[in-house]
Length: 156
Image 1: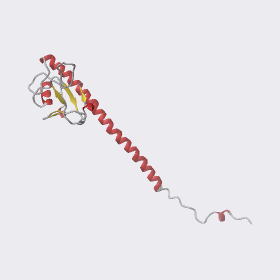
Image 2 (image 1 turned 90 degrees about the vertical axis):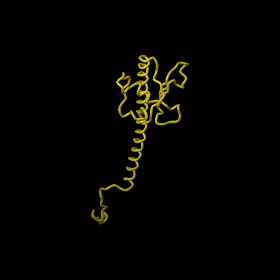
Image 3 (image 1 turned 60 degrees about the horizontal axis):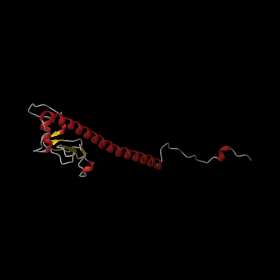
Image 4 (image 1 turned 30 degrees about the vertical axis):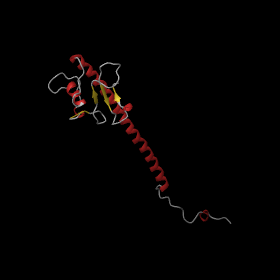
């Protein structure tokens, strides 16, 4: 005897709800979390690298301005007061003298000149670093406050 096709099928067919299972959702959330972590960790590195490059460029520009200052005045500016405030007054005087370097207004504070990391640049004349016995200045950024001077951005 031949059975009809309908008798071979189960009485109830499973209904597809069209949604995702919890496992599928967890896999997608995990992948998104991993990608977000990679992007955020890379963004911090890129910001620090950009600040380091900017500080290096600013130190080179200030060094050129100091050479122009020395050519006009016969010597580098002394740092008898706060190191970078003396540098600021020498390179960008408020009394109408020759401007050797135009600092950004948001980088000037009461305590001196801020580097891209938000800390003061350092300036010392005569410098303590060995410059082959010449009378030279030291100009540096601590690169975010590192106490390890090997990581500083400096002109020597």
